Length: 187
Image: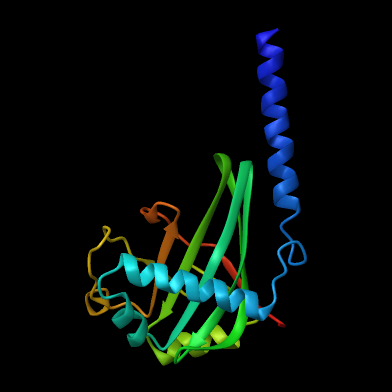
């Protein structure tokens, strides 16, 4: 009887994850430009509070792409989706979605925020020209790992595109954005 109960629990979890993943369409998470901008502001404030010189890092970037709420779920097959804004000189110029799929040992769901910094004009312009830009295919993104309350010096990374990933506990470690697709939205 216990085996049957465990199998039912696993099956129910699988169904929940698949429904969540299949429901991750643009319409399911549609937000207005104003809602996205408000969430971007809150995410950047959190970043500034967690990284000593976070404001300086953002000011050094030619463009800042912020996804305040990226939802990920999976059971063997996983997916993620989020919407965000690209800011240049502190002003929103475009809205984007991010999607990614994965296969392998995984179970559960999580929410995270992603901040992508374009440190040079060439990287920013290449990103903006592509209708569907894929990390690791169109360009590499260096995910920066630092401890809480540490400061960073982007000059030491010497990469055209940098990223920070934040979850409910703070900056996340050992993650990659490889394979993440970024698509311009009409908002």
